[in-house]
Image (cartoon, rainbow, N blue to C red):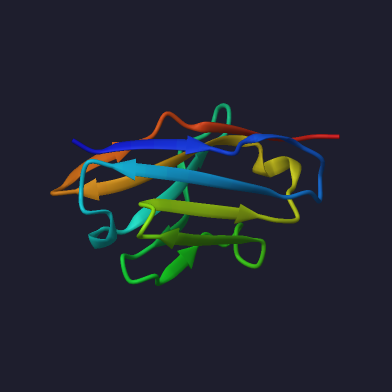
Length: 115
């Protein structure tokens, strides 16, 4: 059983920054790629960034140059550093991992970018 717990969301002004965290438990964390997704009201859930067990990251075009995904395998935690936030970044952000073909999701953390 894999459990993912996100934290770090909140209300921030345009141009501001937030750092999201996702703590994982229940498996060998360092073996698996981890992803951050987001879902805005009325829209489909979309991939924001992904990082392999070895630390290779890739990003959605909307996140490139502004967001940074990282992981601390010793703490079984993956992070999403978000800078230069825009109103269109407003969404619920979810942490994700696939283990043996099963997708696991956290409960999500709300990010609201508004003045």
